[in-house]
Image (cartoon, rainbow, N blue to C red):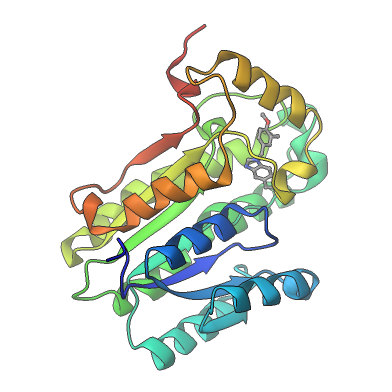
Length: 256
Ligand code: 1JT
């Protein structure tokens, strides 16, 4: 029997077949989960629809996580269709491209608010709507983060601050919903070639450095992240909450 047999999983953040969220969807399906997917906007809809169909997703809806109305509509649909929810995946981030390069001093008030709204606050908003649907069913919530939320990386800038807020939110949410038996964790993934990474200057250099210096001497894959996500959202991780779990070939343990 699959590790997630019969569990109902709602996944935010599929943009294309390189998305971390997509690798998670495929892995969850293989382990017997039922899936619902959301996508950010009409631009990605034509890519996401065929993917959703190929895993038999029962609910596929647009959701701009900046919109309370969009979020409400998604959870209303989940409540109607499933009557409950076991797993929530947050794999969503955004920052203005101009603020992911050069000096951190050039972070604007608007850019800061935007990056933190989409990349950190949205997890809190989704958790608030998900928790009533997770009552009495050992729910699990999972967010995606990056080491730039803990240490300084060139160009990561405002995203680093957003990931720091997201990681702290994982801990505060874990405490808030823990009494209801709901667990909240994050995976800190090593650099991956996704749509998000495509817009980042010098990304290949970063990936090359990790492959050279990390204990495993390679970059991670989307499937590596999906494997850890499967464990963290399964009952095997029933005693694990509030954790930032690195899936980074061990890069973060190295000092020099
Ligand atoms: C976003 C982007 C969030 C790229 C991201 C991200 N989280 C990780 N990456 C990849 C990355 C980016 C930089 C980096 C290392 C990894 C782009 C769109 C907005 C959200 O520098 C060390 C800059």
